[in-house]
Image 1: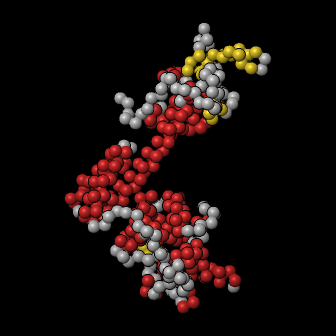
Image 2 (image 1 turned 45 degrees about the vertical axis):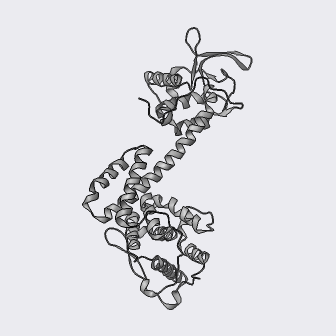
Image 3 (image 1 turned 90 degrees about the horizontal axis):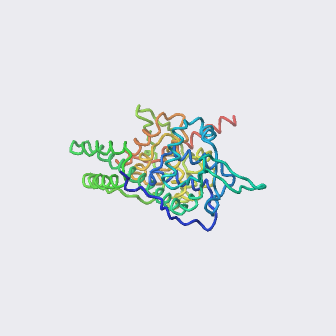
Length: 371
């Protein structure tokens, strides 16, 4: 039975007014493979056929894109795919209307040349890819947007699930378990949307905290010394190193100036520049960098998203950069950030001590280099 999102290729497709890049069409088909019910093995066979088309562009005229490799040649190009399997995938491409057979009287594939050009060719006609290009690109765009929505819904479910787990209430055990099972499966957008609404409504009603995206918070680095607390590093209760503050180690900052705070963070946290050397000019850019950087250092997207909700986007980004600075000392960055998020939820977290510790560590290392 055809999936609700699957699309058919119309047999009466009109050809594009200009040639179409064969690799762009193949990429779009990969993106929309589920919508067209095409397996990736079938697309691998299509890719092999495209390699026999000498030009990068698929011609606009029907019948001008015929390739004629023998099955043995195709099999070799597909790393020894059995011919029975190859014939099945070729038949699927023809059935979908992506490829047309142009058979010779004896069903062999060959070409008749006149001079330097091919006058007559028998084999597989790839020109339907040009005729269906508009539909393929449009479906691929829709598939990309759907995938983005699904990723967002999955993150929202994971965040709401963490909130319900934190309540430690047996009434929500079934809902929490259902969310876990659905997140492990490849669920439809409709299923995820319904569960998202149920999870968030339940979390809002029982925590009193609506799930939303807060404004960027100002990170004020100057503050009382009693904020210089030691932070939990990971689940084994290791610590983030902090040093005693002296009067000359206070970080100057204009409390009313977000840009000043941003410059201080960028001066102290420099490791991220190895990954993203482009200059950061605003908090929004820094948050984006932290979001992309988190999975690279072992922080799952739902963990970062929860930190962003609980701490504020700027504070969460700063925390990620601080973790990166001491990555060699932190065994579980994801667990560490979760602990900081829990402290933020209780109103007992500030990233000032981490920044001050990093500043002092940098000064100490510089002193050792100069002595």
